[in-house]
Picture 1 (spheres, rainbow over the protein chains, first blue to last red):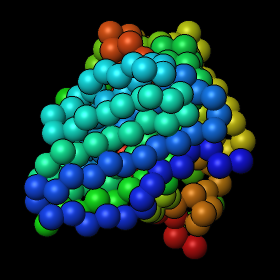
Picture 2: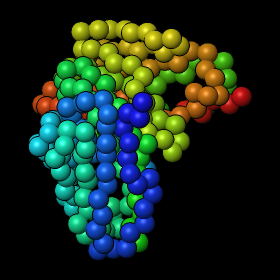
Picture 3: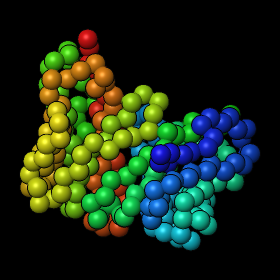
Picture 4: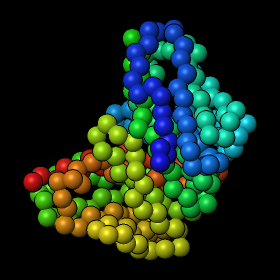
Length: 115
Length: 112
């Protein structure tokens, strides 16, 4: 009963390097989300997906790209990491959209440091 | 900008006391949800209240919603040290489609 699994859990990048964060869910959820959490700023939505093959921008999409090639996976890419992207990243999924009164399930987070 | 704003930002109480956290939001909602986050962990859903509901209970949790004031409160009764965590409210925001928007959270510390 894994739920939402994020890999890796920790990563240190040098400025300008690229990386991909993987999110996998085994609940057959349609919706998936990527958030970043910074001290004093709560969670901010980066990108989200309402189904396989779809993606949409959230509040803070700049510097990130995403892909949802398979329903169970949602990838977050950083093409050229910057220190401002140092954060804790959370993936979440839900059976339907928030407007449909469904809860979101979160992964354990990825702590990313860009030096 | 954040849709939901929690108040207070931090709350420290003794075990056995009740803890009340408030959330205010700006635009019309379909539902409001409360989540809990233990230090270093992901968020866990606690309770969802729909816009046509005024109060909801789940165990030691009681949530109220006042859509006229655009506010909600989360009450934890008979708190325990294990309730120490950050608590976030989240709203769906009708104009944003499928997204949940989170506030900055209330850090609750329950002292044994």
